[in-house]
Length: 78
Ligand code: FES
Image (cartoon, rainbow, N blue to C red; front, side):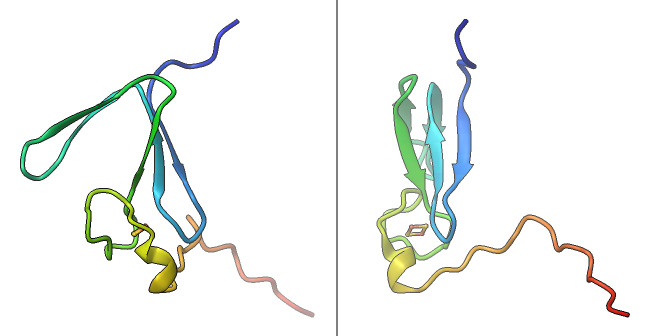
């Protein structure tokens, strides 16, 4: 039995999106990048990369902190 063959997007805590192919990526200039099945690219999530849309590691220097996907309900204390 084989796994899913479509693209996969994972978030790295306090870091980039890790995108696994197969997929086609088109940047703001219209340049096309083909990511073959099983290969990955890291896309900037902090907004500070000098090589957008790719992560260049700047998130570490700017101490980027990702937020949780949801806020848990507050715990009521008696
Ligand atoms: S997430 Fe790495 S430089 Fe933005």
